[in-house]
Image 1 (cartoon, rainbow, N blue to C red):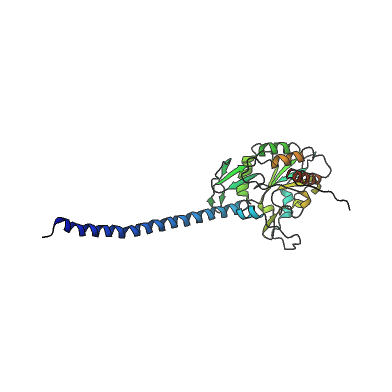
Image 2 (cartoon, rainbow, N blue to C red; image 1 turned 120 degrees about the horizontal axis):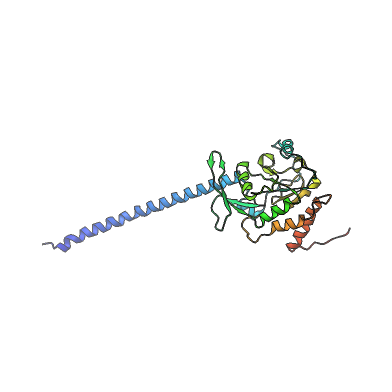
Length: 284
């Protein structure tokens, strides 16, 4: 005679084995689902950053680490954009008395933009429509930006010249300049493309070159007129940054100088001293 205990034991054992067999497929399904989710997230992030690269000129992490890839100085490559003769028409003649002109880059010079919410704070969101699709971009203003624009506008004609798309950049400029201190705006279609990089030709904006300076973080931007450049450090998220304050202090009172490019050299000297670089004068 078989007891109830001996009858139930095989049944329980079978059920236990079935449960153990069933655990493996469940774990496999969960792992597969997580892997698919990770792939989807990576694709979405790649898509977002790809859109940002097309919309603005924000450097990639590789560029921030290793610096910009420069246009070759001996480059004789053909220029793909032929719109330079049209730039002067976008900047109408100045009213009398004429002010010298400060041309400002946008991305990494005045603001930093990212397609995902940054871990720290951001100042505002813009939603341009790119390729028929709405994109949300988070914008952080460089410290001192409002005071910088106000100080410049009192003494200079202020122009935004960005390699970013107009659909994106115009929204950002509207937000950082509610008082209309910026006189004119130039976008990507006003840039020259050399070796796959955007160059800003100051010779086509209809102003005397000796009365113009370009404030930009990208060394390629001033490739054609390097003597007009005030190159600043790229801005990402340093809330203690004082680069704009330094530029403002250099340009303050320089509006009346005969050659504004002298201010560019003075800026570099002050920047080197501030960064702890010792300058040695050698007489030949």
